[in-house]
Image (tube, rainbow, N blue to C red; front, side, top):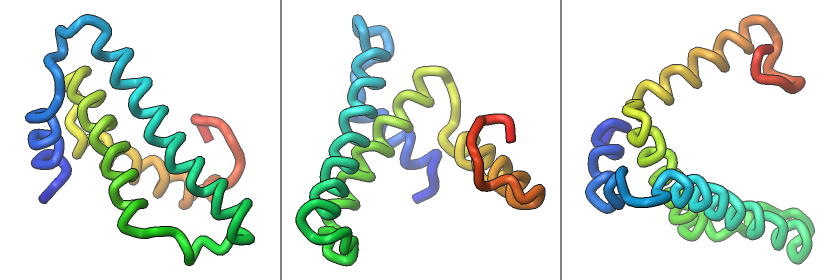
Length: 109
C-alpha cells in the first residue's frame, strides 16, 4: 500500500470535513496519540532504565498507525496528498543533510 492508497482508506473511517469543529477534533486527536507514544516512552525510561528493546512493538505499531491516520486525514482536510507530504519531507531532510544542517533547531535550516 502506498501513502495515497492509505490516505484514501483512512478517509473511509473519517468524519465529514464539514462536521462542526472537525479540524479541531483532528488536531487534538493527533496531539493525544503522539502523547500516548511519549507516555509509553516515559514509562520505559522510568521503569525499565531506558531499555527501549523492551518496548511492545505491536503496541507501538498501533499507536504509530493512529498518528498516521490523523496526519492523513488532516492533510486531506487541506486537499494535500500524503504522498506529497512525504516527498517534501524527505527532500527537505536530504537538503539539510547535504548542507550538514540536520542538527540544530528551526524550520529554515
